[in-house]
Image (cartoon, rainbow, N blue to C red; front, side, top):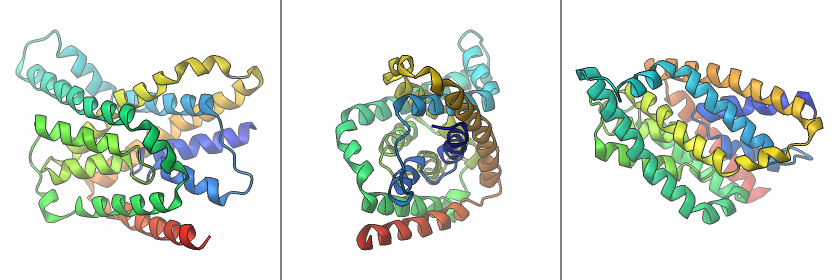
Length: 264
């Protein structure tokens, strides 16, 4: 793999990991559309995921500091932060259960263009509903039940075509949670999810060929930089209530993918 190809793949990973368009879905589409496309290998994928994980940690470093600080301080704000930490843990549990228990089932879906197309339409619907009047009036901070439901949503987002960020933010908004808080919670719960997925295959890092190290590191840096940009852009979109722009994109991509699946 050349440095140029690694950078391009890193940019794609950084953008699609956070923008609500489904990175896994786009990967499946790329495999069917690009001549000579080949999987980059598990090691490179792990490095890209670690890069996007670092992007979340950097972007939400203040939130993470407050969560850690709340463990040894006593104040009203610290109590609120400890409750948020509890919600993150509760959301992570169903995500982990679904990911581990359904891994063999979900793997087979990564070769199904029809599944990707259908799930992109599901993502589009969720994003559209997230801009409904009911969701726009969200004033809640969330509770334990909300955390579990959002965690289940995140677990199901392993299905190619369902955007992790798009589905979790949309469900949170539909539950009445404020859009900015919904986005913050979505990305905070992505930290243990991405970490867990990377750790399961972390030992593979030692198998990275020496000659591939420069290209892999360049790809990881590209994913980190574009990931930070994508996070900032998405939060701006949410603040301006423009999620339906991504809904339109996912609708077009979903319909195009279904057409390709049934005619190609």
